[in-house]
Each structure stands twice: as structure tokens, then as C-alpha cells.
Image (tube, rainbow, N blue to C red; front, side):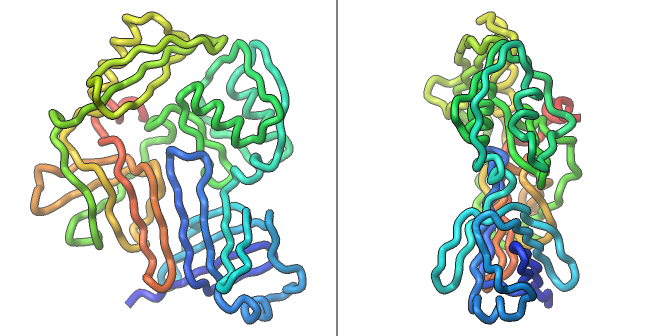
Length: 327
């Protein structure tokens, strides 16, 4: 029998017990979040050294969860909100919290993505991903906005994926952002508790792809390819505004979304460990021909009375073309 363990550090306090912990992490959002419910806080604080200081918004948070002696760090961030009920609930946010509390106003001409991001993280302990793509801006402006708003602006205007890995700000094209990671093995009936996966045929997949060509001065040319009534997806290409070229690139990109494969999520135990943007190597002995690898778009982690659970959501299927782009 696996014994659940936890080490939760909040400011000056360290807890080995909690009522519930929930962590939400996604490649599609800038911030990961966590909630911690602490029962009998008075007793817990009485056990701590330095308990007179209390818990406050802005305190650093580290959540380590596991079985037996096998602890892994699941979340690093800060207390964003305190709900003083019984049990006490702490709402937490990753390093996006640091940028959310700062205000920025500045205009640039003939700058780069890296220069803008260095300005945003100046004075913090956030570092930039070394593999960040080179993107030129002819002009870029921030007017009394917080850092997360600024990142959202960059993300939306240039179609980039932006999120944190600990203190590192990851920035790049979706599904090409990190080095190709070893796949996590999942097999139905072996290490999967439940599943809401559905298998779709590529002919049933309806996608409308909007291709946005962006110039250095942020002028845009938009074209659409694919199914007029399909699910809308958007891709950006820099320095290209020729309509014919954008359509050709869009039709090539559509091939990535037209495949026979699964969509949905699975529910597993706390192990094997995975984060969003990892790869799930999924197998079902009942349908061996349907085995495949998928990027993990998001992960929901829960720990508490109901056990230690992880819920990865499948994203894009890992095809040869995608592997070539991220290797």
C-alpha cells in the first residue's frame, strides 16, 4: 500500500498535512495555479517555529507530493489570495504572480522579443528560456499594464506559447517550445484509473485554420483554409504577407490536425510523473493498432482524501512532421 506524503512550504511554515491540494497546469495559459486547504490551522501553526508571522499574500509557496519517500516538486509560486474559512484555503499562482504585480509603460522602435521580455523580468529572479525564437518588432508599446497583460498581448499578437517552468519563462511556437521529451508510458488497464478518451477518424475532423502573416511593424494579412464550419485554430507566420504563400503554409499545417487518433483525457495515479508539454505514449491492448503518442496540453493534479491523482489531457498527435520541428 502506498502511503501519501506531502511537504508544503508557505512562507515561514512547512506542513506535512493538508486536507486537499489541487494544481492546474496548461500549455495554453501563462499561469499555473494551485489551491491548498489546511485543516485545523491553529494546531498546525502551533507546531511551527516562527508562527507569530502568520501567512500573507505574496508568501512563496512550494508543493512537494508523493508516495512513501518519493517526493517531487509539483508547484512553485506565491500566495495570491487567502480565504479565511474552515478549512483555510490558499489560492496560489506560479511566477506569473511576480509580473502581475508590476506596472509597465514603455515604447520601442526596432526592437526584439528578447529585449521586451528582458525589460519585463528586470529586477526579478525570472530567467528567459535560452531557446526562445528571434522575433523582431518594428514598434511595440506598453501603456500602464501589468506584466501578465503584456505577455498575453505578445502571445495573442504573435501566436506564441508562453508559460513558466519554475523561474524560467518559456516562449516559443506551440508544440515546438521544448526539447522533445521522453514519452510517458500509459496503458489502458495497467496504470490508468479512468478515461474519457474518444477515438476520431481523420475524415471526421473539421478544422478551419486562420493563417496570420505578421510584419515587423505588426501589420497583418489573414487567410483561412480548411473546413468553413470547422473548429477554428490560428497560426502566425512572421515576415510573410503574401496570400498565396500563407495559404500554402496553412494547408501544410492542416495535415498535422487531420489524423486518426484520440482526444480527451485520462485519470492516473500520481505516478508516472508528467507535466504539460510532455508526451503521452498511449496504448490500449484492446486496440493495438491505435497506439500513438500525444502532446499533453494540460494536467490536473489532486492530492488529499481521495488519493493522489493526475489527469493529463491529450493534445496534438505526435507525427513525424512534428518530431522534425521540435528535434
